[in-house]
Image 1: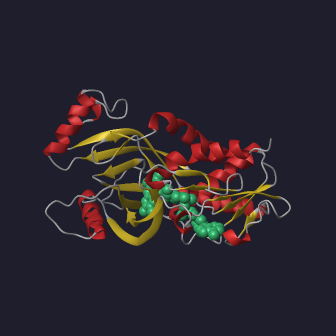
Image 2: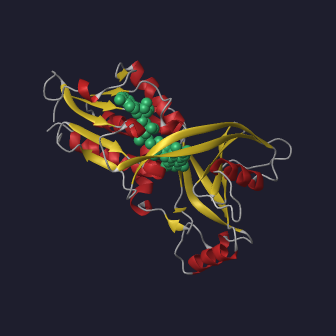
Image 3: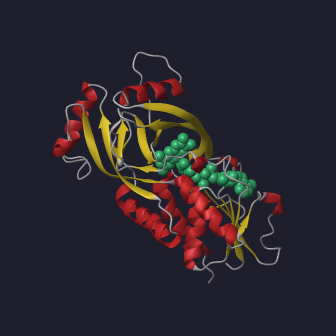
Length: 317
Ligand SMILES: Cc1cc2nc3c(=O)[nH]c(=O)nc-3n(C[C@H](O)[C@H](O)[C@H](O)COP(=O)(O)OP(=O)(O)OC[C@H]3O[C@@H](n4cnc5c(N)ncnc54)[C@H](O)[C@@H]3O)c2cc1C
């Protein structure tokens, strides 16, 4: 597969793919008009070994987490940008039933080594081994780098402009266009919101590196700021909009801190019905046009391995 690979979209998916190709010495160019519509601009990049309402091990954690983190760490060194923060998550249970569930799982060793008996408190459990990738920092660093190298087109690429097989020098096009993708029926867009908060001051002694979580996570992102978002929301007995429920949880969890809301950051991420990312050739365009999309709510974990897979496939023989 020769010719210059064109990557349409430079959110998380496009950035990881471009970096994998760059490392492999493959020629590529990137197209993206800007990140106004990018989920990666507002995605929290939180990666935790224990997730979901039922405190389960994150799917693919054992196979992917270490390699994914190493992928980001390599970029940190190569580009001189800080991306990864190691985190501990203090997750509060909401009722006796949930407390019982966690105690039972911990008792059976199901969540070890991430949640262990020594991490149990009266109303919460500590989840060890989580981390965060600073997605906005990653995509902005990639953008600056590829602009400087003359590989970035600050414009959209449209399917009708694609000349794979016709235009000289055109290798395959890989569509990493997030919510703009319309040719993959399995994908649907899910809206999400992150609250940006200013946290701290005399009343708020909140150690960096600790996430508060009760279904809504509150994540310190440095510089006296935190982001809050929902893995799932339960406001028992109340009928609140999602944003109101998010705010109610933040008020509860930050009752011991000084904080104020700075902004609501909204984005749309793509997800497939089976929650498995879509990574492969477009039907009818095999060898010419591919897709990397549907990274879903765990894009930071699944993205690096998928980008590596594409990079191997695209390597000229
Ligand atoms: C509120 C929220 C919270 C989240 N929290 C987490 C989290 O904690 N952990 C986690 O792992 N994931 C999280 N996610 C998910 C994660 O952000 C996404 O999986 C990931 O950002 C998706 O990246 P992407 O590159 O597929 O899409 P995007 O980031 O949306 O990128 C698509 C890019 O394509 C560009 N584009 C579109 N059309 C064209 C075209 N024709 N030509 C060129 N470029 C084009 C757009 O400008 C955009 O920059 C969250 C998402 C949201 C919305």
